[in-house]
Every structure is written in C-alpha cells, then in structure tokens.
Image 1 (tube, rainbow, N blue to C red):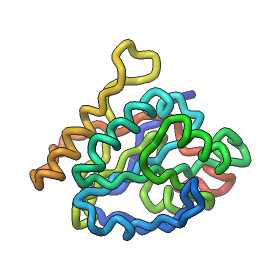
Image 2: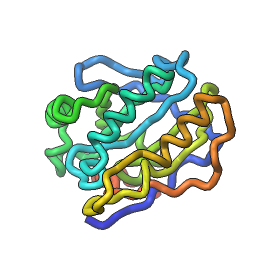
Image 3: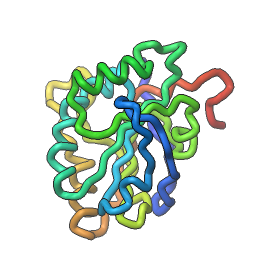
Length: 189
C-alpha cells in the first residue's frame, strides 16, 4: 500500500467533539476526559501495515503515560463494508489481541475523521488541558520493514512536554501510513 502523509487540524485548533461506540459497547465522548491534562486521539485500523508495525509499542506507550495523566483513545474510521478486517467485530478482536488499554472507537459514519482532518492510519492528534492541538505528527521514524523497533520517541517528547506544561516543539514530522478508507462519496476535498 502506498504511504499517505496526514494533513490534519492546524496547531492551536480545538479538539472536535466526538461520541462514538467503544469495542465494549459503551459510548465514549471527548468530554469524558475533561479532567485529563492531555488527550491523545489516534486514528487506527486493524489491517494497515503501518499500524501493525507500531501497535504493541503504542499499547505499551499508553500504559506508560496514562497513569501520568494522558488520556488516549483510538478511532477506526475505515469503511468496514469494503475492508471487513476493519469491522466493529474485528476491532473487538484486535483490541484484545494487541492489549490496547484505551477505548477503541468505531467512527462508522466517518464524521469524526473528517472533523479531525485525519488522512492516514496511524494519525496522531495530541491536545493540551485546554483541548488545543499541540502535536500533529508521527509516532517515530520507524516504518514497516525497518530493522529498528518502534519507540514512540517523537510522540513521547510531545507528551512529556504537555504533561510538564512546557512548550511542545513546533518542528513536527507528519504521520505516515495507509490512507483512511473512505466510504464512496465521503472522502473530504
């Protein structure tokens, strides 16, 4: 699959609201995390080699930073009819297989992906306590087929800065991955 770079919200933009179903059937909303000093919204899917490359490292990353105040949610917006590996039922299995400690949400009508300007999987959106976008970049420099394992270093630096209430480095590399699998007629622009 060809890699696609993200073109998301502008830095400083407010986190768009969401109310989506988690893999356990609960409805999860942006404001459920109002008390968290940082919110990370990650657009994921089950079949993309870029996501599969970092999935275990992302789960570990979340387990490391959630106790420090980082709220994390994963969102799958792919067209499950044309890509059945990304169906809601497959998301339930994938969350269990990887051990994601965060809610994995189903954006069935793709409205949340459009609101965020998500373009690829994985696509990372980090918001500060005021829910302003402070980081829109990659997990790290690793890619599928690389010898080096994923570390999350780029995202880690940004999360640490937010949790310490420091300025986040503005030199951010865009996320790279598979394009969002839009339903016919739903692709933005």
